[in-house]
Amino acid sequence: MQPKQTPATATLAVQIADDIRIKIERGDLQPDAELPTRLDLQATWRCSSTVARHAIDLLRQQGLITSGRGRPSRVRAKPERTRRTSERHQEEKDRVLLPEPDRAAVGVSETDNGVSIDDLKFSTTYDLTKANETLAQLLSIKEGESVLRRIYETKYPDSGHYCAWSESYIPKKLIEQNEKLFDSTEEPWPGGTQHQLWTVGIELGKFIEDVSARMPTTVEQQEWGIEDGVPMIRVTRKSVDTQDKIVEVSHTVFPADRVELTFVTNLTRW
Amino acid sequence: MQPKQTPATATLAVQIADDIRIKIERGDLQPDAELPTRLDLQATWRCSSTVARHAIDLLRQQGLITSGRGRPSRVRAKPERTRRTSERHQEEKDRVLLPEPDRAAVGVSETDNGVSIDDLKFSTTYDLTKANETLAQLLSIKEGESVLRRIYETKYPDSGHYCAWSESYIPKKLIEQNEKLFDSTEEPWPGGTQHQLWTVGIELGKFIEDVSARMPTTVEQQEWGIEDGVPMIRVTRKSVDTQDKIVEVSHTVFPADRVELTFVTNLTRW
DNA sequence: GAGTGGTCTAGACCACTGT
DNA sequence: CAGTGGTCTAGACCACTCC
Image (cartoon, rainbow over all chains, first blue to last red; front, side, top):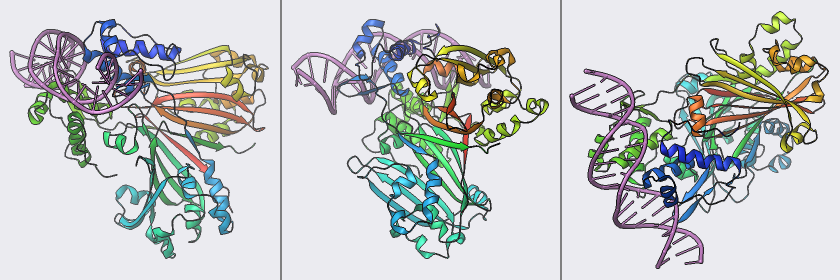
């Protein structure tokens, strides 16, 4: 879409912000270029510091610029995004029947989170909990039935910020034949969740993934080290077995500026 | 995730906002409940109007509340989301070989945008344009080669706001055998893009969809009637034929509070 | 008409950056 | 050290809603 003009009805702060935004979109202001200072804007537009400030705020909330104490605001350079493709589901399945050394060759953070960085602090929490109404309905069990909850957290050791976060729910009765599946010290499990399910006789037939986006809270911004104007993407994944029964439900969240999702839909041939 | 506490280092506005946010998450403040007024907050927290105002701003930017002139701010009720599932790709393909009356039974806005509302103003713009570098590379053509660009816009006739927007690019040389494909008055084409491609001998083998999210600009907020704190989701879709060549590239955007995406990944059986 | 939130003024002080 | 952006005060006026 082309740069758009600001209607005459817009407030002064919006006019200022859009003037700068159009300069960014046209390339007059390149990534990392310094923006006008608050005093500049006050002089140019004959406005108070509050209005100049608000204009800068708007641009930051749109994810277009960064700003910080003492440093001039700058046009935000788009960060590299990790790609997370739906084809890893089939790849994981293909590995299930391989001998353990081959399965173990792929790290858990790679299979479960699509991120393959080495120097990360990885932690897993297992517990048994009772299914609430939504979860019970999804998993075709009774409300209050026992489910294994697994929480996977990956953090950058230097900053302590999250790199990845996800939680997974599996009905206890489906997997209780294999007690190792309740032991978090077995993580990272070679071959991932699909191999774990295979040890109790479950073959997956498909994954159904729901994708949505929302803004992070201020607390999430801190925990993830997210800048203003960056949405969170949430993926709810249902793992469906070959009898069309949902055997696992998981939720994953991540900042939209760090990950891009790819989904491949294969069509049957004529 | 559980409600989190505000660190002591947070600014006053953030503390106020988080105090309210936690009340919302705990259910102390139900959807549509009125929030404390600016004067309330000034009195309770002994702060200036600017700080009270900023706290409300933060919550609006997080998409948690709505506010407007003369009306008290309220906890935002989650709107209904339209579901847009990847299975419609196969369904569309299955319809291609049907006789025209059956194909025409499904509206274009339904097939292309996943939205099936009747009273919408639908408009299509066709033009021939030259491929830029990115597009040329994706479509395996030379930069500057002619491509058919089609823009689909759906608007609510009362407000004039967008309901759906997408653009599509197809290399001219792939489809020039059928001149009807360059005539926008043929829209809505019964059977959609897959049938159009079939008229020039192209069968699709898969779709590759990249999903990302970002904040809307102030102009997009106006054009779509989007409230603060609602991200835009962007889907770039590559239509791949049975020889693994990309024959069409399309971009779709929509507000994250109105649409939810579903992707189904089928796995091959053991 | 009273009360709400939206916008704005005209300052102040602070933390931090870069030179 | 000067200059930046971050936070905040203490107001003002306006448009709008609801009673």
